[in-house]
View 1 (cartoon, rainbow, N blue to C red):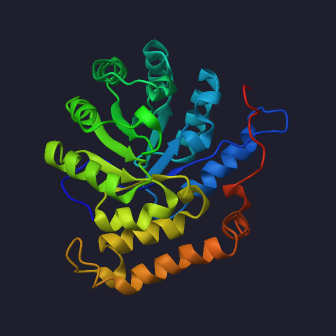
View 2 (view 1 turned 45 degrees about the vertical axis):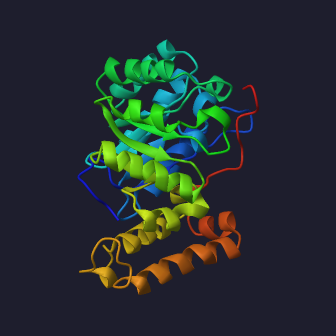
Length: 293
């Protein structure tokens, strides 16, 4: 159920970054992966260099290369959001500069891991402001899981961050329905133009029903058609839900059940095997970068 007029809406697949056995990026597989996922009908865009895409384990050059490949695989008007995760604000600014140069439509700024021990409101606002102001890119905030200590934004911190003019959305990764709803209520009351994107695979349907502008989730890189169908059915935009009021699932309940059943079938049959059996480029390899690599 979409409300307001956010610039970002729909399903954004959080892609993976395939690796060779030696820990280097498998660029050919990456290119195939991005193209295979990006070809899904109805996909709004991609999220690259997020947690599923190896994130901070990649060098600045590698992150830019991934983004360039994504932009080439998914030309405008489809959108590409680039994850940025750095302990130092100056490093985050440089990564944002690279993202802007490589054609990102927005960046998703992750909170530094050191904030898990202690998060200061002034530091949080300054960190985000420096990055968002440096190159004028639109900014997605990240709401960390509710169990992630102080990485999770408190209501006062989130309210202060929403005052930044370049904020266009939030990837809501609380992994708790009640926390998600609380975040959404706060965002809608302060910035109805900011998109609240659902996250957390097993909570997608609940979040869609509570209200969202879409999702940024790695599950959509595995089975994009199912996630797209689920979001459309919950939003009343599918064929069976045509004419239904936002939030009224009765008109499209057949489509919703069908989409949910497809998702359930994937889980019951073993998701990686089921979803990737006929489209191997969506998960091109099982290698990851070694810890500390």
